[in-house]
Length: 128
Image (cartoon, rainbow, N blue to C red; front, side, top):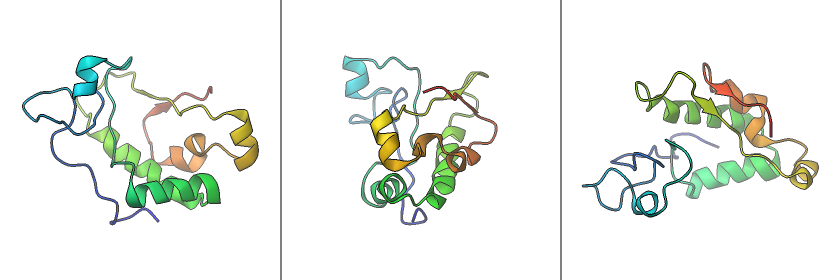
């Protein structure tokens, strides 16, 4: 599951959304310049592809819940990149899961306790 095979994002990234920059001379990516998102800052541990995509799918669809703790730690590591930039009221909001998806899976992977365990010191909104 998640481990050394999942590369950490490196290089310059968009100051707003965290995606890789198409032009490293700029601070924001093309998407954020054309249509700024309704949030101030986002970060990511890695790109949603290959092993990370497999790990997320294993958690969501095969209920491999032990992966959630490691993914929470990865998210915490990505959030730590913001040290000194973030307001004191940093808030992580899990993406709401549709009730039919919850009924299929039996749990909300983004709000699982294991996922949260990797996010020590970060407030997480409990509402959906």
